[in-house]
Length: 342
Ligand SMILES: C[S@@+](CC[C@H](N)C(=O)[O-])C[C@H]1O[C@@H](n2cnc3c(N)ncnc32)[C@H](O)[C@@H]1O
Image (cartoon, rainbow, N blue to C red; front, side, top):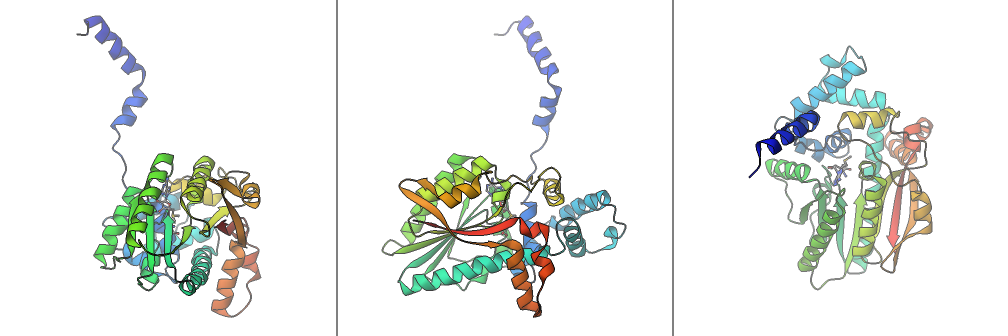
């Protein structure tokens, strides 16, 4: 039984930490990833599924509107209050990130789809089933865009709440596909990441017990949100769990000229409550030398600059060259790499 004296000590200890008390009382904010929504909106022209999903999320528009409104005050744009949500979003991003940001996100889909198409044709020729892992899947719509097929399985991993909201949205527009598996995960917790990869692999083996399998991992837009350590762990896990021949696509920020405290795009992500982290500083060195684990090694097979792929995409669309996109500083520092486990 505690004495009156002890009780007094406890009270005065608590009184010394009022800020801790305040934090623990604050209700936990539950929301889908703002940047997953933002990216899906940005590429509406080539992938309308993301926006269709988002439009079903109750309260989404009001919540996003509030954020944009607050940010428009920060950037002091008198027109912002009078524009539609989509206009505002586009204008904001075009101003603070890059005038070509839509093309950048379109370019990423284009880069991944080109790789996946070639890989699937090869799998078909070799009689293999295709398994695509999507860590940090967000409102990605590969399952909707790629024709449903018995020889294709898509496995999505994401933060629990974003994934749950996405699944509700898919049900609302009645496009949930049978060839998709979902695993909630938080890659800032290495055990969670490992466990869910293992669970996914078991489910894949159950789905295709007799078949030769080929794996493709697409880490689109995920590396920026993880600490260097978490990125490192994620790559090591993939290397450990997946067989040789697996392809891994990722986008990543090159070099040290991306300063998360001053770059406007980084500030925008922070504003959206998704602070930007970076790959390990020596990521490029590591991938050039090849990451190693369990007797396997990851090697970079090809690399394409984001500004170049974006320019290619736009040139194909409008039928003339776009050198200004190639020169855009934001596009220049982002690379798309395809790795292979050997
Ligand atoms: C910019 S979005 C990209 C979404 C999607 N890959 C795309 O390209 O449309 C980043 C995604 O990473 C997910 N993410 C961020 N941090 C994560 C973490 N620690 N664990 C798992 N997923 C995370 C977010 O929930 C979000 O869906």
